[in-house]
Image (cartoon, rainbow, N blue to C red; front, side, top):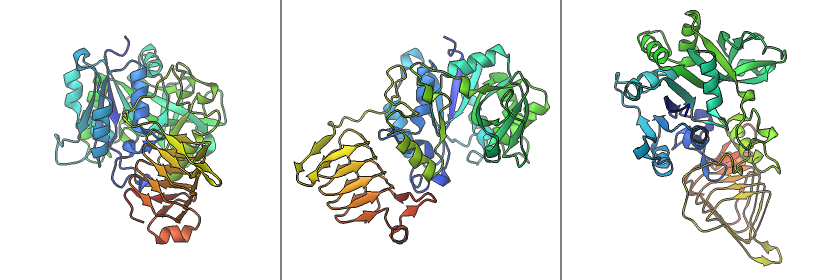
Length: 411
């Protein structure tokens, strides 16, 4: 199998400041998504479904729930030398946390030397997408590349938000600019689009070890792949190619899924990506048999909907309801529910995300909100109707008007 000589390293140490308060007690890759998944499940599924079974997950900030999730949900076969290993920051090279993406790899260099792969995949752990990674690896091999970066075409007007890559007609990298303030070079044959880096890299092992070791010795470096290592390799004339993510296809892919990639780094982006799952034909299909999305399985009973008398009806429309939920005489519209949520009589919840062990009291009204875990909402409570009132109660309200009730909040 083409992935046998490849080691995967997933960078999952992100603080996720823009997702606060969802990241108050957990790392960004551990934030729940789509009811029963965690954000990190998507990249791990991409590798497992692509046949890569040697995976190191590099953790750092507030990693407890992420550690539990990986340990319980991603046990592969050690007998076949298959693993999803947790690699906490061990400060082996000094007394520092990871100073940047390149430093994270440098501090774990012994894992690479121990495994001795031919190729190393370094991917982020905090984006929502599907990808058959073998296609990118094949592209890397065909071009005899030292480094291949996955890029996604974006409208050229949005260039200042991303790390932008300029390529020649053969998709070889000629320039890499972090958040350019000028109009960058467009994609070959497509004048309205440029290439944003997805922060996913495939390195030849020797090139990776050499470049992060040299970068570690530079005191003026941010020790980041995008800001430091890639420009250094580019200046040295290394063979760097860009893989067009829009060319990627995977088993069971719908036409709407081509090029689907979401950075759910802000509350509004996170809320919208969850709401998108509720479309009749969503851009991201969670139900594909050809591309299974695995996660830790709870041993909870099926969801239950009870009461049907006058206006006391347990009902959900255009919603995703996870196992263990009881909809008891209340109504849901356009919602995503994690396991073990209880909605009590005469309450109504719309356009909202409710995480595990949330209980909504009778006659409560909630709209356009994210209720984090272990929150009990008293009867007759209104959330998401009055911004000032929500802020006064200590909730977070995003620019787009999404109210977030933090984990374990007492109302």
